Image 1 (cartoon, rainbow over the protein chains, first blue to last red):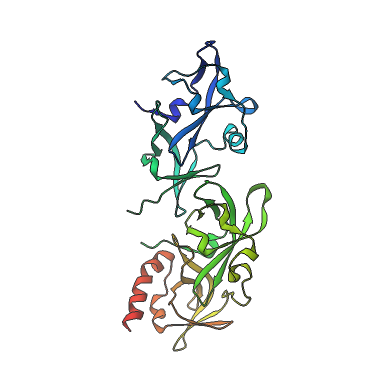
Image 2 (image 1 turned 30 degrees about the horizontal axis):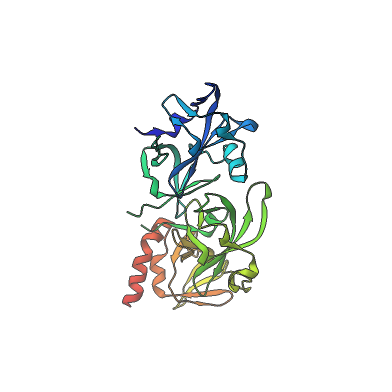
Length: 148
Length: 186
């Protein structure tokens, strides 16, 4: 079963040790080169924490499980700060082709909840393969131009 | 279908990195070489809160593509200070501005005065024509031959150009190929 960024957004993060809710998923950060989910941002504003993908104990339909709260850490560099601020949020991001034409907005990203591997990206009605995503940042997500 | 844009539509476009998805600058002006008939580079403005002239320039070789909505570069290293850029980009010679130049056919008909360059979108600065204040009134668009004589104030175009004064960029896009096949036929 695949999961999607819009569905994952807002899902609660729960400690397996204490059964405490540690916060909600606010943003999802990807590793463009590896076509994978890199981390989840839990909580918003100054309290936002980073949950690296390898610290996710289980990604279920109702909750993201972690061993305990030490799985989460404060942002440690510019990239993580930008992610925590939501500047790298993909949903709603402007999409551009690599030849500089606007492709609309990214509406969702489908991924495998077991591996974090991105399956496809939706631009409105259109589906783009993960391989066609060349880069993503605060301004835009860049897709390989379909020259067909 | 060739997509075209005037220089004025390109000024102000964001310069966006393919690798990073960041808007690292915006186009201030085009550095046009009328002899070569192409844009050799771009001068830049800073984006956002730092708005204002940037010292950096972008050489055409570093441009992945000029698009309708953005100028794409691979990464931030594509933007360099003038002394690190090719000489005709870092220190462009003066007297290259074709704006206001009269367009004369080989047999001496004036088609009008140059207002702007017309760039092929998707290229890194290929200029396929000029926007002109047409001698017949209004705005016209003419295709550009690969070779043409340019002085400081006049440029000489093939006689056939007379038949290819288009009313809009769509017309020019369609005319470019016909124009070039006519030139190579004669």
